Image (cartoon, rainbow, N blue to C red; front, side):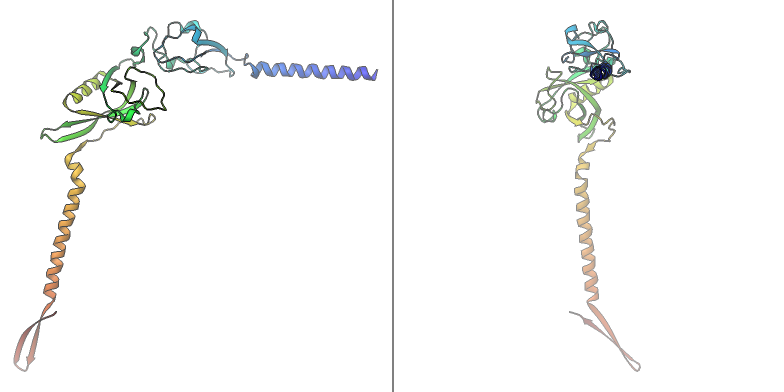
Length: 273
């Protein structure tokens, strides 16, 4: 009888533990208690049309889903990825082109902006470090009204859309190309086209988190020679000071002695060596 009681207690404890484990798995182990969202089942390239084989539904482990997420596969029919979406990443509206966009470069362009290509080389293109998704400033070197060379930042915080014909590359490996496609407003496109027609352009890579806009006055030839001019003036001042000191020394090296004897007064010049 004692043995049967112990067995019953063991069975009861086992049932309780089983219920607790199943409950825990239901909350955390497979996440089926959370809302459903769509994630990428494989990597989706920028500019590509999202297909059903590229996405899947999962149950989100948190009660709140990410902003702009989707909860049905049908909601993503014929949508185009504006950025690379990695496997397992939730599909968010911020990474998609507007509804009705076609696949390709045009789907990567922000509404109201344009894509324009600039010819570069290994120096102008920042040695291949200006890659899709990078942000750059553009410096134009032109001639002013006096024919003097003049450099100025004409466009600031410009997004690179593609290099050559590639919209996605390994960002850890620089790639030297002969053309870079950037995203500009129509007005900025006009300024860039004018600048490259009358001068030369240079790309300046910047930190993507730097949101500042450059408003420098530019640099002219006299700005490069400014320090040199100051040093020449300093040398001239030193020469003048040396000459003045020398004159003072010469004047102090001579003297005059006046002798008075009764009503007689004699003056004698002397030179000090």
